[in-house]
Image: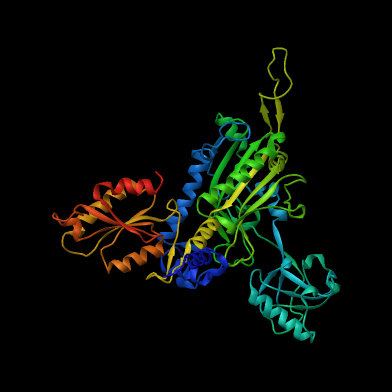
Length: 544
């Protein structure tokens, strides 16, 4: 038997992403139907993924949790910094908008990454993922590319460059820098991580991340060119006036939206973390410029707490404020910007962005007002100088915007990584410790064996639970294989509770007549409860 200290150490290790294998997590996702490679039977397509039955339900549960807590419950009833309930309304805007939307937002002209190509291997690398091998702080010297968060790629290129120079490269002689900051005439050697020869990297070129498409049947791209949206935010900004004019909302208020976005990532990697098609959960919260700082702090702290409530706790989740040199084009100095970051196995001991919270100032509304030649300012009759009757004269202004923007796919990935819990004592060797609220399978009902009248009792119980809880997730029913194998399958699926009908359930002379065995996924404890109380038991466990 393990000591308490050993048990704590094992628990700590299981919760540390650095101790988890991303290959093992991906294998479980494929094996149990969470995530598949898109177009797999045709060899797949890089940067795209399909969600299987469990993954689709997990993703829906996370989306529904966000929608319920943000939109329907207004931040779960938490009062804003003005002491009033938070007002949020939903929209669902088109994936394809007038191309002028993306010209005004700056995406057409500036939404690009500088890239370099390797002439030998035909691989492509971001120009800010290059390394200068010279004197510390010196921008001249040898340059080689490496793949982000890929230790093997990094080590291979370093080894080749060290061999070329016929000496080891000391750690204090390594500078990470952007090739765009270096003049081409300063470079003496360029090395790709998988190339056999030196001098194979091209000069950086800009690659636009927008997905172009053509509107109309003629296929004339010059006159009918459009784009798949790279973010959901702009659809909200261009409908700001429509929402104000057609509803009774007043500043401060937010507009929320979930939906697909598309970015032509040059080097998608790390499973679903960086994909070309992904889904966002975004809020654009409009407020008076003087109140922007308080609302930024409100949203920053509440969004962090929200992810923690879903099980992303401890040292695996951090809130990181941006430095001045990280501010986006829409942010001004002094505006708040922060990221909620999770320690994924492929970023450990570092972190990867899960959600960004930014003070976008009035940049977007101002851009669209200028380009569309439309007034988007807001008249606030609660502000301004007082008239003779003591009432405010009103104030007209362009609202500032606080944007909490979360990646739904990254959220699902973080929940998968956090839930993945190796346990060599179990038949499955691992279980998925999902928070019951987002678990794709809420409960399973099993007859111990497929005879003796047990299925006739188990099947109606499963139907009853499905009618009551089916809108929250799957209620599984299975009468095949041994009970141990069925438990193991539910462990890998992350099902928190299994209800088993056995011989004692049907034995009128047994003190356990009309009871079922409840198995808890996390503790493996079992208890007996009456069949009649199963629904209420599950409701309590699910927090309903």
